[in-house]
Length: 84
Image 1: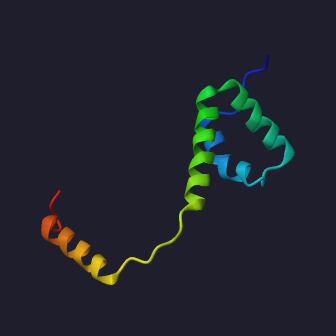
Image 2 (image 1 turned 120 degrees about the vertical axis):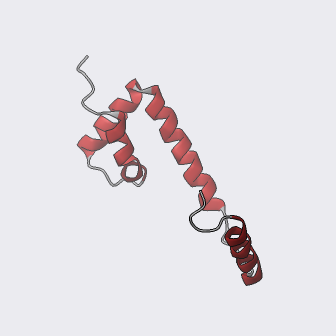
């Protein structure tokens, strides 16, 4: 077996393009070959895919302006600038 020319970092760079089917055939084959030999990347891809599916089901909600104002005021009062 030839060594895998792809690193986990390289696979990570192509995940979105791979899922959106925007990679050429050679890239797809190399990507999938790495996944077959790297259980960590295979699990990461499955988790990424699941996250995208869950997030796509979330509906946008309108946050009342008063809630935004109270939240910002709270943060400013409890975490003044310069405090870490």
